[in-house]
Amino acid sequence: MRKRWWYWGSILLVALVAALGLAYVAVRFFHLDNRALRWSSGAQPDVAWNQPRWQGASLWLPGYRFDLEGVRLQGVDDNLSGLAFDSDHGHLLAVLNRPSTVLVLDRDGQVLRRHRLRGASDVEAIAWLGGDRVALLQEGRRSVIVATLPARDGPIDTTQSRVVPLTMADAGNNGPEGMAYDRSSDTLYISKERAPAGLYQLQGIAAGGPVHQRDLSAWLRRLPFATDLSSLEFDARHRHLLLLSDESQLLAELTLDGTPVSWRSLSSERWSLPMPQPEGVTLDDQGNLYVVSEPNLFYRLRPGKS
Image: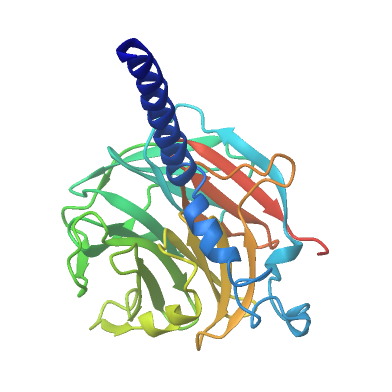
Protein backbone atom coordinates (compact mmCIF):
# COMPACT_ATOMS: atom_id res chain seq x y z
CA MET A 1 0.00 0.00 0.00
CA ARG A 2 2.82 2.38 0.91
CA LYS A 3 4.61 1.69 -2.40
CA ARG A 4 1.39 2.34 -4.34
CA TRP A 5 0.87 5.64 -2.49
CA TRP A 6 4.45 6.63 -3.26
CA TYR A 7 3.99 5.71 -6.95
CA TRP A 8 0.81 7.73 -7.47
CA GLY A 9 2.14 10.57 -5.33
CA SER A 10 5.24 10.82 -7.55
CA ILE A 11 3.10 10.87 -10.68
CA LEU A 12 0.91 13.66 -9.27
CA LEU A 13 3.98 15.67 -8.26
CA VAL A 14 5.51 15.37 -11.74
CA ALA A 15 2.17 16.33 -13.33
CA LEU A 16 1.89 19.37 -11.04
CA VAL A 17 5.42 20.53 -11.86
CA ALA A 18 4.73 20.08 -15.60
CA ALA A 19 1.45 22.02 -15.34
CA LEU A 20 3.16 24.88 -13.50
CA GLY A 21 5.89 24.94 -16.14
CA LEU A 22 3.36 25.09 -18.97
CA ALA A 23 1.43 27.84 -17.15
CA TYR A 24 4.63 29.88 -16.79
CA VAL A 25 5.42 29.55 -20.51
CA ALA A 26 1.82 30.42 -21.45
CA VAL A 27 1.84 33.58 -19.33
CA ARG A 28 5.46 34.72 -19.81
CA PHE A 29 5.90 34.08 -23.52
CA PHE A 30 2.37 33.77 -24.95
CA HIS A 31 0.67 36.24 -22.56
CA LEU A 32 -2.46 34.06 -22.42
CA ASP A 33 -3.66 35.82 -19.28
CA ASN A 34 -3.77 39.15 -21.11
CA ARG A 35 -5.35 37.57 -24.18
CA ALA A 36 -8.07 36.07 -22.00
CA LEU A 37 -8.72 39.49 -20.47
CA ARG A 38 -8.77 41.08 -23.92
CA TRP A 39 -11.32 38.65 -25.33
CA SER A 40 -13.45 38.15 -22.22
CA SER A 41 -15.62 41.12 -23.15
CA GLY A 42 -16.31 39.85 -26.68
CA ALA A 43 -14.77 39.73 -30.13
CA GLN A 44 -13.37 43.29 -29.82
CA PRO A 45 -11.58 44.90 -26.85
CA ASP A 46 -14.20 47.68 -26.94
CA VAL A 47 -17.03 48.42 -29.36
CA ALA A 48 -15.50 51.88 -29.90
CA TRP A 49 -12.49 50.37 -31.71
CA ASN A 50 -12.14 49.54 -35.43
CA GLN A 51 -15.29 51.37 -36.47
CA PRO A 52 -15.74 51.47 -40.29
CA ARG A 53 -15.89 55.29 -40.21
CA TRP A 54 -12.14 55.33 -39.50
CA GLN A 55 -11.18 53.53 -42.73
CA GLY A 56 -9.56 56.11 -44.98
CA ALA A 57 -9.22 58.54 -42.06
CA SER A 58 -6.59 56.66 -40.06
CA LEU A 59 -3.76 54.17 -40.39
CA TRP A 60 -6.44 51.46 -39.97
CA LEU A 61 -4.32 48.86 -38.20
CA PRO A 62 -6.58 45.86 -39.04
CA GLY A 63 -5.47 46.26 -42.65
CA TYR A 64 -1.74 45.83 -41.92
CA ARG A 65 -0.03 42.56 -42.78
CA PHE A 66 3.43 41.23 -41.93
CA ASP A 67 5.96 41.54 -44.71
CA LEU A 68 9.09 40.62 -42.73
CA GLU A 69 8.91 38.50 -39.56
CA GLY A 70 11.59 37.83 -36.99
CA VAL A 71 14.65 38.94 -39.00
CA ARG A 72 17.69 38.74 -36.70
CA LEU A 73 19.79 41.90 -36.72
CA GLN A 74 23.37 41.10 -37.69
CA GLY A 75 25.86 41.59 -34.87
CA VAL A 76 23.13 42.18 -32.26
CA ASP A 77 22.79 39.55 -29.55
CA ASP A 78 20.46 41.12 -26.99
CA ASN A 79 18.79 44.24 -25.52
CA LEU A 80 17.26 45.63 -28.73
CA SER A 81 14.85 48.36 -27.68
CA GLY A 82 13.33 51.57 -29.16
CA LEU A 83 12.89 52.48 -32.83
CA ALA A 84 12.46 55.70 -34.88
CA PHE A 85 12.46 56.80 -38.53
CA ASP A 86 14.76 59.46 -40.01
CA SER A 87 12.83 60.81 -43.01
CA ASP A 88 15.74 62.98 -44.21
CA HIS A 89 17.87 59.91 -44.96
CA GLY A 90 15.21 57.18 -45.17
CA HIS A 91 16.86 55.23 -42.36
CA LEU A 92 15.60 53.59 -39.20
CA LEU A 93 17.21 54.35 -35.84
CA ALA A 94 17.25 51.72 -33.09
CA VAL A 95 18.80 51.57 -29.62
CA LEU A 96 20.36 48.91 -27.45
CA ASN A 97 19.98 49.63 -23.75
CA ARG A 98 23.05 47.61 -22.66
CA PRO A 99 25.59 48.65 -23.76
CA SER A 100 23.84 51.89 -24.72
CA THR A 101 24.17 52.06 -28.51
CA VAL A 102 22.39 53.71 -31.44
CA LEU A 103 21.99 51.57 -34.58
CA VAL A 104 21.27 52.97 -38.06
CA LEU A 105 19.26 50.44 -40.11
CA ASP A 106 17.88 50.25 -43.61
CA ARG A 107 14.21 49.38 -44.15
CA ASP A 108 15.02 45.68 -44.47
CA GLY A 109 16.68 45.53 -41.05
CA GLN A 110 20.29 45.62 -42.20
CA VAL A 111 22.66 47.38 -39.79
CA LEU A 112 24.41 50.29 -41.55
CA ARG A 113 26.16 52.06 -38.64
CA ARG A 114 26.71 51.76 -34.90
CA HIS A 115 27.24 54.54 -32.39
CA ARG A 116 28.18 53.73 -28.80
CA LEU A 117 26.77 56.23 -26.32
CA ARG A 118 29.17 57.81 -23.85
CA GLY A 119 27.62 59.30 -20.72
CA ALA A 120 24.21 57.70 -21.28
CA SER A 121 22.70 54.82 -19.33
CA ASP A 122 19.81 52.37 -19.82
CA VAL A 123 18.56 54.03 -23.02
CA GLU A 124 15.17 52.49 -23.87
CA ALA A 125 13.85 54.70 -26.70
CA ILE A 126 14.92 57.08 -29.44
CA ALA A 127 13.07 59.80 -31.37
CA TRP A 128 14.30 61.65 -34.45
CA LEU A 129 13.96 65.42 -33.96
CA GLY A 130 15.00 66.45 -37.49
CA GLY A 131 18.38 66.97 -39.14
CA ASP A 132 21.08 65.23 -37.12
CA ARG A 133 19.38 65.58 -33.72
CA VAL A 134 17.82 62.77 -31.73
CA ALA A 135 16.18 62.41 -28.32
CA LEU A 136 17.31 59.50 -26.14
CA LEU A 137 15.17 58.24 -23.26
CA GLN A 138 17.00 57.05 -20.12
CA GLU A 139 14.77 54.79 -18.04
CA GLY A 140 16.81 54.58 -14.84
CA ARG A 141 17.71 58.26 -14.76
CA ARG A 142 14.17 59.35 -15.72
CA SER A 143 15.40 61.84 -18.31
CA VAL A 144 15.67 62.71 -22.02
CA ILE A 145 19.00 63.53 -23.71
CA VAL A 146 19.07 65.72 -26.84
CA ALA A 147 22.08 64.47 -28.82
CA THR A 148 23.70 64.87 -32.24
CA LEU A 149 23.92 61.85 -34.56
CA PRO A 150 27.25 61.49 -36.42
CA ALA A 151 27.31 60.98 -40.17
CA ARG A 152 29.79 58.09 -39.86
CA ASP A 153 30.54 55.21 -37.49
CA GLY A 154 31.80 56.33 -34.13
CA PRO A 155 30.68 57.09 -30.58
CA ILE A 156 28.22 59.77 -29.46
CA ASP A 157 29.46 61.75 -26.47
CA THR A 158 26.42 62.86 -24.48
CA THR A 159 28.31 64.33 -21.53
CA GLN A 160 27.81 67.87 -22.87
CA SER A 161 24.32 67.28 -24.26
CA ARG A 162 21.14 68.83 -22.93
CA VAL A 163 19.38 66.61 -20.38
CA VAL A 164 15.69 67.15 -19.56
CA PRO A 165 14.47 65.49 -16.32
CA LEU A 166 11.07 63.79 -16.23
CA THR A 167 8.51 63.99 -13.44
CA MET A 168 6.73 60.70 -12.82
CA ALA A 169 6.19 58.21 -10.02
CA ASP A 170 9.20 56.00 -9.37
CA ALA A 171 8.49 52.36 -10.18
CA GLY A 172 11.95 50.80 -10.24
CA ASN A 173 12.53 49.12 -13.58
CA ASN A 174 9.02 50.07 -14.78
CA GLY A 175 9.90 53.64 -15.69
CA PRO A 176 9.75 55.58 -18.99
CA GLU A 177 9.94 53.11 -21.85
CA GLY A 178 8.58 54.56 -25.12
CA MET A 179 8.85 57.83 -26.99
CA ALA A 180 7.39 59.49 -30.12
CA TYR A 181 7.86 62.96 -31.60
CA ASP A 182 5.54 65.41 -33.36
CA ARG A 183 7.79 67.84 -35.25
CA SER A 184 4.99 70.24 -36.19
CA SER A 185 4.33 71.12 -32.54
CA ASP A 186 7.74 70.21 -31.05
CA THR A 187 6.06 67.67 -28.77
CA LEU A 188 7.47 64.46 -27.33
CA TYR A 189 5.09 61.77 -26.13
CA ILE A 190 6.54 59.45 -23.48
CA SER A 191 5.09 56.24 -22.07
CA LYS A 192 5.72 54.79 -18.61
CA GLU A 193 5.85 51.02 -18.89
CA ARG A 194 3.64 49.82 -16.01
CA ALA A 195 2.90 49.89 -12.25
CA PRO A 196 0.90 51.83 -13.38
CA ALA A 197 1.24 52.51 -17.11
CA GLY A 198 1.36 56.21 -17.92
CA LEU A 199 1.41 58.63 -20.85
CA TYR A 200 3.08 62.04 -20.80
CA GLN A 201 3.66 64.99 -23.13
CA LEU A 202 6.77 67.19 -23.27
CA GLN A 203 6.48 70.43 -25.26
CA GLY A 204 9.46 72.48 -26.43
CA ILE A 205 12.10 69.74 -26.40
CA ALA A 206 13.85 70.81 -29.63
CA ALA A 207 13.44 74.58 -29.17
CA GLY A 208 15.97 74.66 -26.35
CA GLY A 209 13.87 76.75 -23.97
CA PRO A 210 11.68 75.71 -21.03
CA VAL A 211 9.99 72.32 -21.40
CA HIS A 212 6.43 71.80 -20.21
CA GLN A 213 5.28 68.33 -19.09
CA ARG A 214 1.66 67.23 -19.11
CA ASP A 215 0.14 63.99 -17.81
CA LEU A 216 -2.13 62.29 -20.40
CA SER A 217 -2.54 59.02 -18.52
CA ALA A 218 -6.33 59.45 -18.38
CA TRP A 219 -6.38 58.48 -22.08
CA LEU A 220 -5.39 54.96 -21.07
CA ARG A 221 -8.72 54.32 -19.40
CA ARG A 222 -10.02 53.26 -22.81
CA LEU A 223 -7.27 50.61 -22.98
CA PRO A 224 -8.00 48.35 -19.99
CA PHE A 225 -6.65 45.39 -21.95
CA ALA A 226 -3.21 47.00 -22.37
CA THR A 227 -1.44 46.29 -19.09
CA ASP A 228 1.84 47.82 -20.22
CA LEU A 229 3.16 50.36 -22.76
CA SER A 230 6.43 49.37 -24.43
CA SER A 231 6.63 52.00 -27.16
CA LEU A 232 4.91 54.89 -28.94
CA GLU A 233 4.81 56.36 -32.45
CA PHE A 234 3.25 59.54 -33.86
CA ASP A 235 1.41 59.44 -37.19
CA ALA A 236 1.94 62.93 -38.65
CA ARG A 237 -0.46 62.39 -41.56
CA HIS A 238 -3.54 61.68 -39.43
CA ARG A 239 -2.17 63.22 -36.22
CA HIS A 240 -2.80 60.03 -34.30
CA LEU A 241 -0.76 58.24 -31.65
CA LEU A 242 0.24 54.56 -31.78
CA LEU A 243 0.69 52.58 -28.57
CA LEU A 244 2.57 49.26 -28.42
CA SER A 245 1.81 46.75 -25.64
CA ASP A 246 4.10 43.77 -25.09
CA GLU A 247 1.95 41.90 -22.56
CA SER A 248 -1.28 42.37 -24.53
CA GLN A 249 0.52 41.75 -27.86
CA LEU A 250 -1.17 44.58 -29.73
CA LEU A 251 -0.85 47.94 -31.44
CA ALA A 252 -3.52 50.56 -30.72
CA GLU A 253 -4.25 53.84 -32.55
CA LEU A 254 -5.70 56.88 -30.73
CA THR A 255 -6.59 60.44 -31.66
CA LEU A 256 -4.83 63.24 -29.79
CA ASP A 257 -7.78 63.59 -27.43
CA GLY A 258 -7.60 59.90 -26.50
CA THR A 259 -10.45 58.68 -28.74
CA PRO A 260 -10.07 54.98 -29.72
CA VAL A 261 -9.51 54.45 -33.46
CA SER A 262 -8.09 51.05 -34.47
CA TRP A 263 -6.05 48.14 -33.18
CA ARG A 264 -4.51 44.87 -34.32
CA SER A 265 -2.79 41.91 -32.72
CA LEU A 266 0.98 41.46 -33.08
CA SER A 267 0.59 37.72 -33.64
CA SER A 268 1.73 36.32 -36.95
CA GLU A 269 -1.04 35.58 -39.45
CA ARG A 270 0.78 32.44 -40.55
CA TRP A 271 1.73 30.90 -37.22
CA SER A 272 -0.41 32.77 -34.64
CA LEU A 273 2.76 33.11 -32.57
CA PRO A 274 3.41 36.18 -30.43
CA MET A 275 6.49 38.36 -30.64
CA PRO A 276 8.92 37.41 -27.85
CA GLN A 277 9.10 40.93 -26.35
CA PRO A 278 8.14 43.85 -28.65
CA GLU A 279 9.97 46.96 -27.48
CA GLY A 280 9.85 49.54 -30.29
CA VAL A 281 7.59 50.69 -33.14
CA THR A 282 7.93 53.32 -35.86
CA LEU A 283 6.23 54.45 -39.08
CA ASP A 284 8.04 55.42 -42.28
CA ASP A 285 7.09 57.95 -44.98
CA GLN A 286 5.37 55.25 -47.06
CA GLY A 287 3.02 54.13 -44.29
CA ASN A 288 4.96 50.97 -43.40
CA LEU A 289 5.17 49.96 -39.74
CA TYR A 290 8.31 48.51 -38.16
CA VAL A 291 8.57 46.71 -34.83
CA VAL A 292 11.67 45.50 -32.97
CA SER A 293 11.54 42.77 -30.34
CA GLU A 294 14.05 41.58 -27.79
CA PRO A 295 16.48 40.03 -28.03
CA ASN A 296 17.32 41.05 -31.63
CA LEU A 297 14.31 40.60 -33.94
CA PHE A 298 13.01 42.92 -36.68
CA TYR A 299 9.49 42.98 -38.20
CA ARG A 300 7.85 45.00 -40.98
CA LEU A 301 4.12 45.43 -41.65
CA ARG A 302 2.68 46.93 -44.81
CA PRO A 303 -0.71 48.60 -45.14
CA GLY A 304 -3.43 46.97 -47.19
CA LYS A 305 -7.09 46.13 -47.10
CA SER A 306 -8.71 44.63 -44.00
